[in-house]
Length: 210
Image (tube, rainbow, N blue to C red; front, top):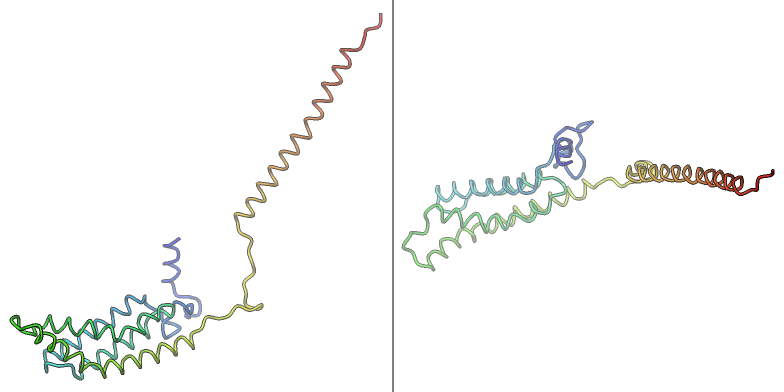
């Protein structure tokens, strides 16, 4: 069953339009799972943060472009049924990706104290707050537009598929009919045997006339 469902999902539908829960921002493009969309945004964010921290020592234009582009691409490419994760990811990406990149880049120095480490890690987070706000606003706006525009069609009397009788119920009804028929045949044959036995008993019990 799972292999059949995956094959149906990979095959392009008739007319080129995917079902609403599986489509991306474009009806003709199949959406990716939420985990893959969040991974795309995290990759863009990490690339932008690494380039800016190695280039100027703080978050700048490259990080802004990569962060916003990755978050918007994730919301546009994810399946309609999995919009929640990419819509709430921008603050989490900044809070996780930036400190990780700072630590991997070798700053602060190995002998630095706790206060210095917190300042070195916290400064990029503070500088990234306006960028995070802009990215979050753009992502939420695009996500709300998709939720409103890409609504599943409502079933009406005209487009509602006809109700089908389950195969199991049909088999049960046919089995019940077969059992009742066989039972009827068995009960129909018993009275005849009994009548024949009673007839033989009467003939044997009657006195013979000399």
